[in-house]
Image 1 (cartoon, rainbow, N blue to C red):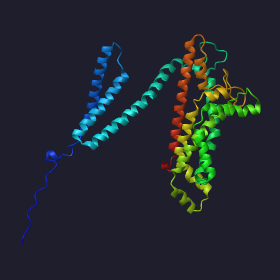
Image 2: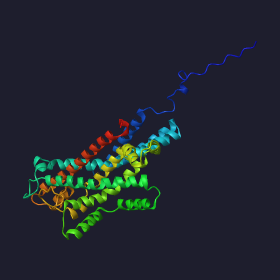
Image 3: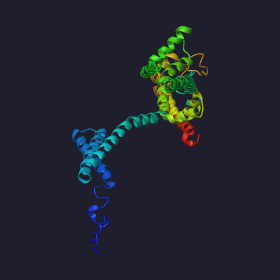
Length: 367
């Protein structure tokens, strides 16, 4: 009886240093060390240039040199240690990260500038007084805050039902029809119209009815609604399109009519995305100035009635304060920056509310 020769034991990766799992991989601290080294070398290089030219330290140049140097070094080191495929992956990751940082620079800069300059104009009077009979220092933007909220609320009441119902028709009833294609084309065209055109449209409609020179808060709401509707339609349309057809078919199989399927199945499933789209449309129009100058006008007094008299808004208030500076000029500039900061805070609060609503109506929470 012959027996097979004993097989030689496989080499253990634990004892063979050439086959360790960590071989061919950069340690986690290496990219950070390369980044720090690139930043230091970039700072030294820009410092030499600054001393040679007699100018100040160029921060933008330092950031560009450091980023380029980091990309070159991380790609070279990764190619030698990990191979070409991993090196390309690190290069693309670095390029994406640099692009993200570049995109964040203006956002952070604008936010920081508004906060720093806007705090100087924030006071109790700013949120409790209007500019009626105020010349120079003092006064506030209560009338503009109220006008912004009322006009934007009315615009949302007008545009949100129209936009959502239009999206429902395009997805659930008009798929492939000529009317639906025409509506889609017009919505795409409306998405790119300048805001001043929407203001001129609202002014022309009301001027034909009430005569030229009319200024009403509801006119501003109509002009903003014209800008909001295409955004609501497109975002709602995409969210409704993401609802799986299996959910609709299961509802139809149980004998549920189509309208009830839309109300009970389709809309709750896509409610989180629709809410996000609605908030994007509100954020899109709440800072518009040109259409509101034409339609709502400028006033220094409180006005709670959208259908009577002129109504001030925060964008128009900031514009008028900055462009029509009195004595002292700094008081007008401070009020303009404070209005801009207040507008940003309002948009942030509305987005936080929208996130809460989207989380409540999300299907994964058991609805």
